[in-house]
Length: 211
Length: 328
Ligand code: SF4
Ligand code: SF4
Image (cartoon, rainbow over the protein chains, first blue to last red):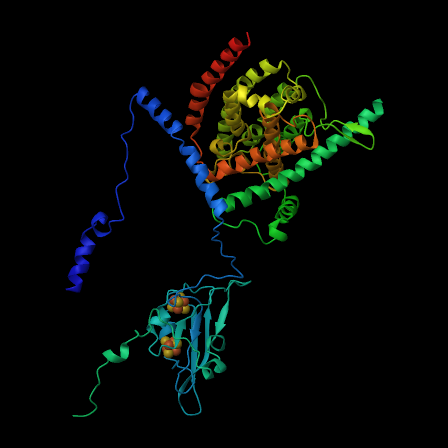
């Protein structure tokens, strides 16, 4: 039912019926003879359209309704799904890093800018020993965040990443949520690409564990 | 006496050069601010209080930029062209009385470099010569777009010289002199004496032509923004480009002075109030240049020519004939 409706909308390209705010612009026929052109000039000249333009800009100047954002001091809010510099999340329960070193992000990265190396730690568990992203190459496509099975690597909101060199590396430690932030419980989950949808819990069905 | 006159003239020239070079800079500041406010922006705000020092920053930038003379340009002409624009703009200022005469330390100063009896003719002529700046600059640049813009600019300039001359002829017939001081004396009796009331058509025509003469927005065809290429100035950099800029803004100020003096009574009776009045009128004309830039679109070159030759010129001729008949 829902899909049908979408289909209907998609095929009907007549915007006037969907949104009545649209209307056809009234285009007067183009004058062909000299007399017609002369009349049009006279009409345009005497109707004072030029003065309407002058008045509009003067009115805006007097109203002084300035829309400038003074960028370094003021910033526009960005959406929660904004794909900027990556972040590495920690587990809420134990504050350990979520990344299991599976290497899927390195594999999928289409601009080949992730480098990951793992080793076995003292408990014979896999541990990330090296992890870096070359932001100079990253195109912020979001594939790494989407593919990550642990919701470990995500995008963040930090977009001011100008650098004085082309190769601008981000290491595991840089991206990891700081521990004090974890303690304060302020780690922000990424809502975009690859993240679980808000009501995922309700949709998950319990899997029986035994016959 | 001769030496005193000589020294006085030199001082006047230096003062005018300094003031109007600085005004050209401040003019760009006002232009940005006014355009910004009209488009709901803030304009320059970061350098100095209210961004006032932006002008200085621009000046430093222009002066210290590398001066590039590209290969294939006609070197000498390329280098002299911006000087022509700036120099002619300031030369035209020689015959403009900027303020009523005043006394300082018991010495009477006439704020006009040379009260020649053909003042208006001289001003219009020199402003006409200013055309050679863009024209030569564009032709010497070895760049097609520069050349096109120069050609366009030249065509418009020459056409609108006709309007300027013809529209001003009627007031000249009424006053019987070409000196701007005589024009001022003619209208010294107050607001009712202004030539604006007796020659409204000539005033509007001259005003329209002033936009073409200075290359301002409805007729901004010399440096054509629509091509995303800065017309004849494309190949210029640093202070050479800056000279074109100073010339353009100085021209705007001077033509505002001329309009105020010819049609709006100038400085009136020569009192302090009259002087303020003159500056106010000039400020209004300058503001109007900026205002139209925010409000109006540019016209096409062919529309501009059409307007000049088929509309404005016949009106100017009719105006002259009617003036002559009334005067007889
Ligand atoms: S966002 Fe895309 S390009 Fe950037 S690291 Fe992730 S997968 Fe690679
Ligand atoms: S960030 Fe995610 S995808 Fe990349 S190695 Fe760690 S767990 Fe695997």
